[in-house]
Length: 44
Image 1 (tube, rainbow, N blue to C red):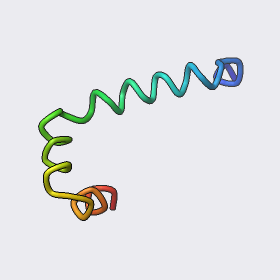
Image 2: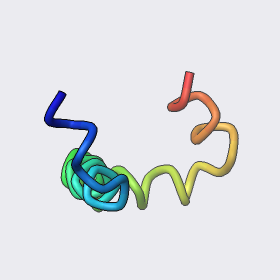
Image 3: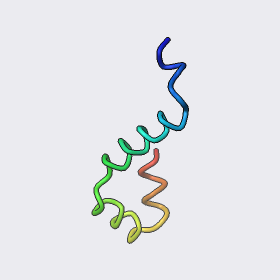
Image 4: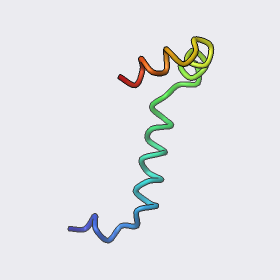
């Protein structure tokens, strides 16, 4: 497969970029204000 020759760091960088663009700054602020319980609930 072609994916096997792509360095893991490149794949990780792409995934980090996509994940960072999926979350809005307002959502991060809301979780910080609400505390750890909200962050745990968001992960489930």
